[in-house]
Image (cartoon, rainbow, N blue to C red; front, side):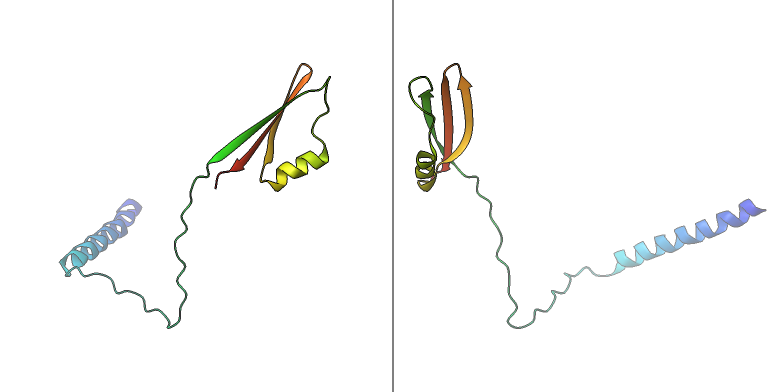
Length: 103
């Protein structure tokens, strides 16, 4: 007897859902109303992301014959927009790789 009672509400719910769907389908379709904006409201323009393009600079130093770039040389490169991207030590040589965004 409990099984019969549990099935009855499920059938009623399904019938209500069917009725709701058929009622919605019988209505005439219309575009939804646009929300009203307050006067003087600020509209944010869309943000467009652009992939940067880079240019690279390679500075190689033979550490047996010359010193690595010092602070003054690195600051001068930084003032020109160069950013140290990587350093590679290969034997007695050191390779410094810089990048900056193309304008």
